Image (cartoon, rainbow, N blue to C red; front, side, top):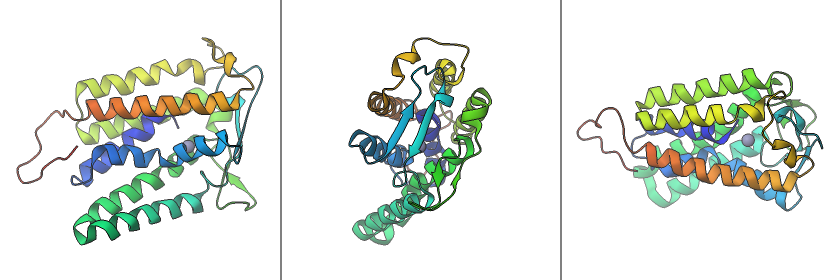
Length: 228
Ligand SMILES: [Zn+2]
């Protein structure tokens, strides 16, 4: 799932856990992807991109047992939650739960759209994913964009934020369509460059979501302060 729709998950969490910092929640939803970038750049995890790349169906996440297994994601989520609880005590328990949910949401959402490339645990046999990215990339984009819009709706986000989610969805059509190409073929065979592109996309998207999510369609109720 692409950065904008992972980051949108932070909006629902912010709605349910108002004391949690929005930027922290956005970072949490992308935490395992940052790990994936790092592990790909140093060669511990591996991505193969077809030389004639035309869409996400040509990106093969062949080895990502640490960043994207269900077990490691759950472990990272629990450890992050425990660290927040340890530092902040009972007062920080809602923040700890929200951050843990944000981290674990990533692998759950990836399972909804990925080719079967997500293991239950490192080096376990069997990999999972609905296969939409490899078989039906454009419906996958529609599905994940609907998730982004649903999160915006629950959050009662600003019109600017709606524009951002919609615009980034349309902007990524060439990456999800084998028929429409705007130069993504230059990424063919370039797995490290691809990982860095994803990193830049995550940082830019996270910053914009944070900026635009600070406005809402309605003020926060009294006694329920919103911390950004
Ligand atoms: Zn991912």
